[in-house]
Amino acid sequence: MYVTMLGTGAPFPDPDRAQSGILVTLDNGARYMFDCGNGTVRNMVAANANPAEVRAVFLTHLHHDHICDFPLFAIAGWMWDRPDSPIVLGPKGTGHFCKMLFEGGAFDADFRARSAYPLRQQNLAAMRPDVREVQPGVAYEDDDVRILCDWVEHIPREISECFGIRFEAEGKAVAFSGDTAPCDAVVRLARDADVLIHECTFPQVFIDFRTRAGVGTFAHTPPEDLGRIARDAGVKLLVATHFGHFDSTNTVIRTASTNHYPVDLMGPHLMDEVVRDIRKHYSGPLMTAYDLMRVNL
Ligand SMILES: [Zn+2]
Image 1 (cartoon, rainbow, N blue to C red):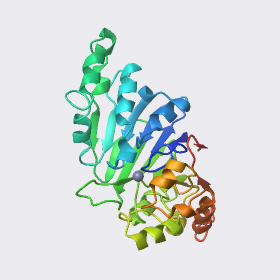
Image 2 (tube, rainbow, N blue to C red):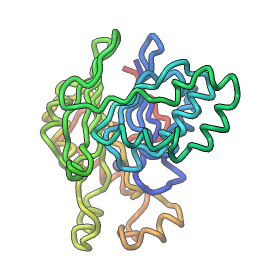
Image 3 (cartoon, rainbow, N blue to C red):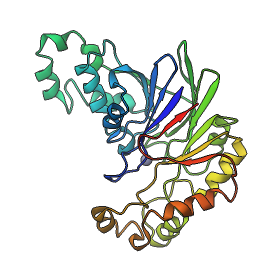
């Protein structure tokens, strides 16, 4: 199997990175998607994968940078003749989110206009997602894969549960942190995994700035802690992702972020600091993700 990083960015629109999204493709061609942030469906097509071929999508939590492209994912699958309902796994509230989208929802006019075509009448199921709100434990199984999940610590659970994931197939394991502060659940999910794909939203210098400035809530994993997590889990490969635009050189991001970020410090060199800090505790194989990066397992 192989992993394609569909999006490696975070909440801001960013010309260099789509928002969160991962595609796993098995040797038999079966595809599974984890998160569906803005830009990920476009990148999926760029990676020569068809949204209509994706068996299941797991939304780790309901922050916009993990779900923005879901409407496009469903509509593209419908237009490209997906015969069945996409399986959507996610936290409590995923059913409500999906119900508000298509028939009678935000995209009702699109649904009604397009469903006037006889061809589109033949696969209306593609627009009626098979939503399964999951609990910690086994979230999904089919003949090829097993997906386990557990709560991670990102935003208050009563607003949205946030899940980390362990995906098992072909005798291998892929773990994905979702968004989280350092937590033991990820270490358990990632135990001896072939790859751990873990969020690494801010370098330490950003964390220090945000702590001083009192900006937002801090619910992400500092690079040093990420190194400890990868070491403690014994993973065979660590992929750091969900980068919070700190490496951007884009003028809009830099000027618009002055209240959030120490913009004078921003730039690609900060990725070196991230790697340096991860390396304080983890010496195994390490990749910093970029959009459309492929990892063969
Ligand atoms: Zn996020």
